[in-house]
Length: 266
Ligand SMILES: Nc1ncnc2c1ncn2[C@@H]1O[C@@H](CSCCNC[C@@H]2Cc3ccc([N+](=O)[O-])cc3CN2)[C@@H](O)[C@H]1O
Image 1 (cartoon, rainbow, N blue to C red):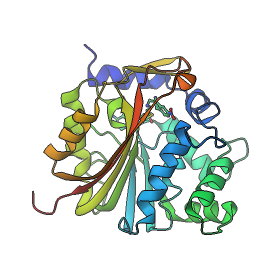
Image 2: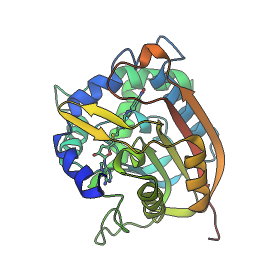
Image 3: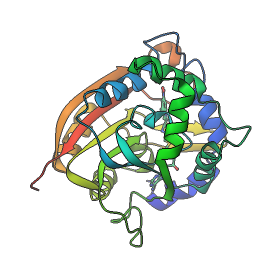
Image 4: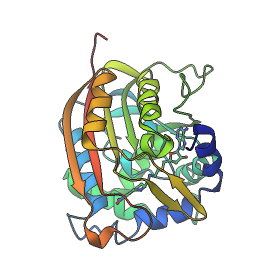
């Protein structure tokens, strides 16, 4: 039985470049096909933010990893975006993008796709510049701590949370997944929205030398965990991985997108 500590130790071998190659390049990131996994995730996010109901001063991205695609449609709706991850290697990758360091991952196809989805005629370089201006901090996080950002962060609860593939990939079992959700919920204002994307029924994934254990969660597990943590499920969407996208980097069966609102009185 893997413990939280053992899981964290295994993350020391996590290779961000391999992880990006596995999940954020074709075939999983093929923008010519709407049915592909990455365009589906981006469409879920773009449509949620297009309602105008999810907005405010601050948004925290829980477990950003080495990716920023999950924030592209958020940046028009918040003044300050805070990125977080457990690993310094991932925080470094994020900082390199923020500083426009050469040799980083090319997110331009993602920015172009987001601009096309949003249909505002925005140039992708404009959106990239806007996101860089909005991202104010890149912080360490541990979702298994009661205060995931640590006691010293003078951070008031955020107006919204986003998280992509973090909770299930950081929890050895369902109970720790549920506790982790309760922990991160302390970072969100009552009435705030949590947009979560995650893997359905995945038990492992590869990131270079690292083979990381994932707690397999079903749609029912995710919904029940959110409701027990005091959320109202506003929208739940599921994507079934087609055989063509089962490329040996994990055993994920599908992807979920959920828009959940933290209830005022708990
Ligand atoms: N204790 C912790 N607290 C916070 N974050 C933590 C903690 N431990 C690890 N982390 C942090 O969580 C990690 C997040 S990356 C998790 C990857 N999840 C699996 C992967 C994802 C994926 C992506 C795309 C597609 N697709 O088809 O498009 C499919 C799939 C399915 N497989 C990593 O950043 C680590 O650094």
